[in-house]
Length: 148
Image (cartoon, rainbow, N blue to C red; front, side):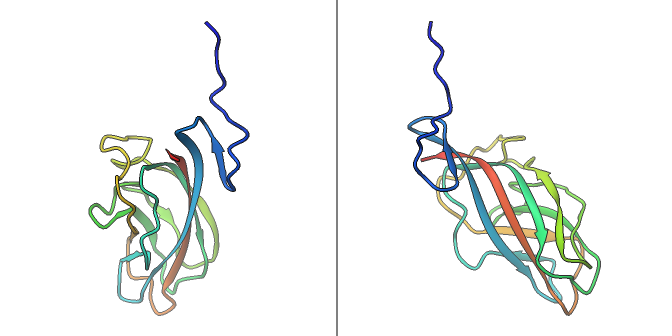
């Protein structure tokens, strides 16, 4: 039996590596602000693609918040820990790259019990404490697999 390559280098799309005619490896980037007095923030518009299961997320603080805080959960409107559940990644007090988290939530490939969302949705985050007057802006770069 012949073995076919799962990688299709001719996918022809920026930011994706085709696995087959139906699947692709892809990156999705968003920026989310957590305001002074809040511990949650979400995208201003629906952007997380439908039929996408994130494998990991790279976290970068775009600014230094007034207070030290940790990124705890990453998810969506229905479940704020759907992608990352129970992290303790220090993200406040200084700008810059903070780390890479495995997507261990119900819709991440690390767990994947619920599978990918059928419809696109906003990404929402939960942090450990109020970021203070400077607020907190996080850039999240998701890498995962999804349907074309």
